[in-house]
Image 1 (cartoon, helix red, strand yellow):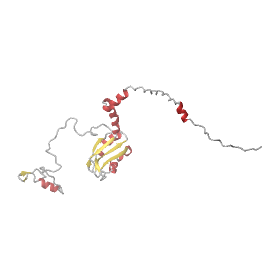
Image 2 (cartoon, helix red, strand yellow):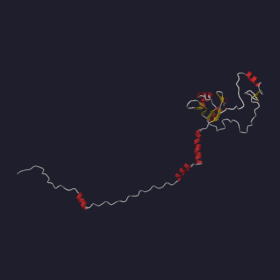
Image 3 (cartoon, helix red, strand yellow):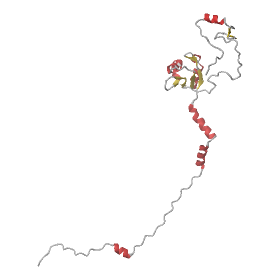
Image 4 (spheres, one colour):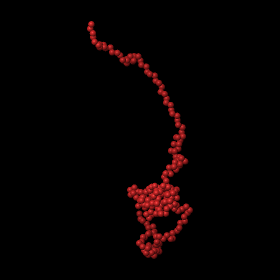
Length: 220
């Protein structure tokens, strides 16, 4: 895809003298168009946008106060030790620093969370003007979300607006418990009678053989 010029360019020069020389070329013609050449630090002439009530950057990002501080717009080269140095005066008030890092490169993703012991210490660190910049970048500071407060809110919402699973569980618990069924006794079956002929046939019979004599024979 062809890349089109957006109509402006920045030129970095080595001295202020060169800047002054280039500013003299303002309104000169290039490709049948008059150039506007200004110093990069000159913001005169830009229209001012009127801010509505409530607009603008609010301290803490306009979020609810918390003991967790979110830090954004960090350099990818930021280390945990850099955050510790930035908040060195709050070392005793910090529980943990959680850096967002890439797994393969082990580099900062550009954000981190700082867990303070109290909401007051987090609020003080957020308002500290000496902790607004790190490694030449202006930090984005906001209150982080306390996930431990999610569960009670979710349980309260489920109680106020139960879903199908909760409604089914409530209906099952409210249903009367059926009485246990009684075991039906088995009817007694009469014992079969054995015929006399069968009984005689199966009975054990005595042996008819001559019993051998035992003892001693005495002659008189």
